Length: 156
Image (spheres, helix red, strand yellow):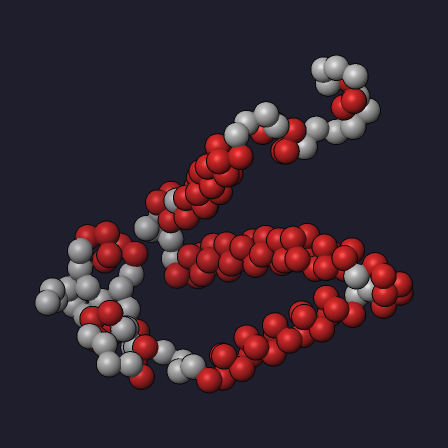
């Protein structure tokens, strides 16, 4: 058949929108789109007012981190675990086993790395201006915007 008659009765996908474009252009458009949405998400810091109390600012951070972790969990499932289970269909009712083993091994690897690496930058030989270890050395968002430091505004 000609035209788009084959598509009747089926929902259009993102792939259909880019169909007919060169593969390099598709990759460029996909990269630019992901950059745009990442930048838009990071730009939230510019619209959060400086006048928020520490409690409200903490709640905004908690919501942001919760949303980001939910997005990563969804991406992990739909892009990694579900396809792994589908590819293991030959194992029948045990098709989840390869994905589950990979998931557990990945979690164990992250746990081991977390235990092996130091907790903060104080263990490294770095300039202390870039490794705040006490609350007095922390820089608030308003201090960062004004150019002041977390130690009474002293500039080095």
